[in-house]
Length: 522
Image 1: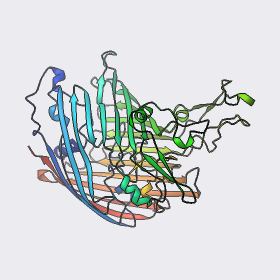
Image 2: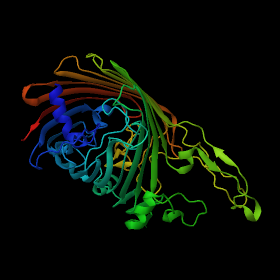
Image 3: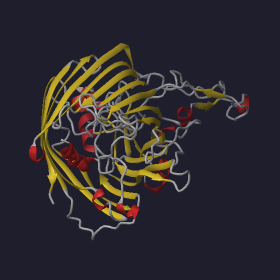
Image 4: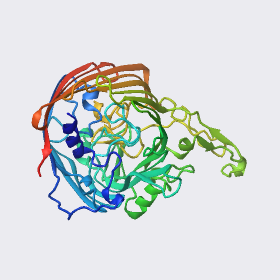
């Protein structure tokens, strides 16, 4: 099973892990051959459920999933990973991953289509590609709050330092990695169909993300303790927004794209068109992000990690401070005093991960706690001529007043516990439950060389949003059990059973069967 997994992982996580290059040790490879080391995968999946597909049979699958009672797909992929050229100072990778689907948001899904080039440690990628979550277990975690794996990948141009690069000072103790990317959302037609053009939608929306991570520690030596810190940020900008009032009257707003929009996505500034007449403006576009951190202790037979994911949607909540020192009378909008608002240190995703390196039955355990109830507090008041007090609260996580929020093809692009718009039955692209508290656990193991399993369980209390709160707390329990068996010649079969209980997602139960064949073309 180990060799099978290594082959399959090369298809979907060619940038994951710490790359080791022969040229770093003075060894150059042979002449480049773009037809060498091409991996392939063919896969078919079928799901049958009572009511909707349960949460953990649908979520964190890079958007290749469906809520319909019966659904399925046939999928084929060919990928040449960059690691094929690890012996050279430069390398070329490419991939195409497509699916013919039944009862999905589209019948033909171009899941991945990309080309990429590496020079030394830097990588330039053009197209749609799966990017795994950083600082979290991609199989057992509930998901990242900003850059998750729940929605379809966005086609983009991405410049990255994908693996930790050792700085030339600090005795190997300081390492950096990160990326910057620009792209374009592809779900215009789905939005038209879902909303019937009767509620808010946005066409031609552009995408920007950037992230940077620092590691303090040296895993190349016997140094068990290391600390990873990072900042993840993303922006939706440009495009054309279509908004509707209570009477159904449409307002069309053309947002800044082009070079000006790209610059304001990179460095937030300005304000969106509908609020240009106001004094206090938010930055142009839909900006969001997370502070992330992970503390690791790596022993001989086990590894323990504690991590945090602190989400924010504006600069005040990003730094947990806002200004409130305005004058009075004619100086109502003049900063006069050193007075600030301090926000509570809350709205965390906190997790622990325990890895037993040589234990077959229980190999990995992940436990997470998520709280998003605070959102800077329930009150929002901009200072005015008559009332100079400024209270900056009432955030609305994953939602935005111009854009359709942090979603792509109806799925949250962050953590799936923010109930995705695809669940809505009123034709609105909105996150109707972004204030919640949840507890999550994931367990995996490999009892035999050919057999692996995964267990997920989540309890969640939902409170709606500040604008549209639930009349009373709604709960949900989601569980899933999955087993995978690998046969000879790199065939595998996985079977999963999942259930939801409660008012948040409904009472659902379903079974999912996946048959896969991986290998090398040459």
